[in-house]
Image 1 (cartoon, helix red, strand yellow):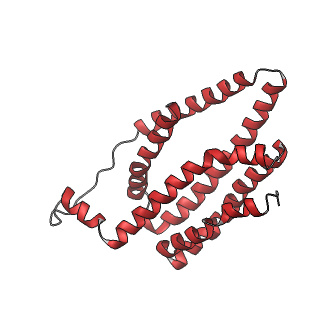
Image 2 (image 1 turned 45 degrees about the vertical axis):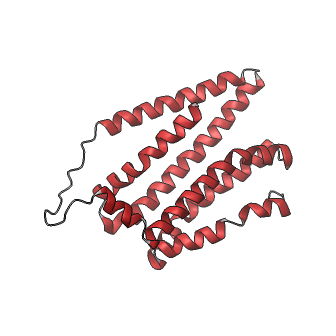
Length: 206
């Protein structure tokens, strides 16, 4: 229940955050801003991942691993509360609406979502997000219990994912700018979908 509330609250804030960032960051630099921000967030997550692993290892050696988890979740809660305070200190963006443009009604918005372009995008985001969130809890047990990775191999695997994102975000940003967001999303979906099969064919670290 707590996990569901945690992820639900985080994802519910996503669309509002996206709209806020879109309003305060000039569009000419938005892609570059998001690329740099993503690199920084991935770097922070990578360092937190290593620090958390080290902390749990330290507490496990002394037979108090539950205290280690309690400390980690306590730190996470404190950071969330600081984030909430910072966001609460922001003023709402004042959006100047063109009076000649009528307000979009719910029925009109629903009709717009039924258009092929919008509906395909929403269906893609829905299915990919649901699939990832259904599969992700099984990733760590599969690697550790079935493939028999050591903790060091598992850390290397997850670290490789973080480092690849940090290294390639600027390249991805330029690629999206060149081919367009729609085509980039299509290519990403095609490339990502078969990747889990490789773990069945060759469950090796390399």
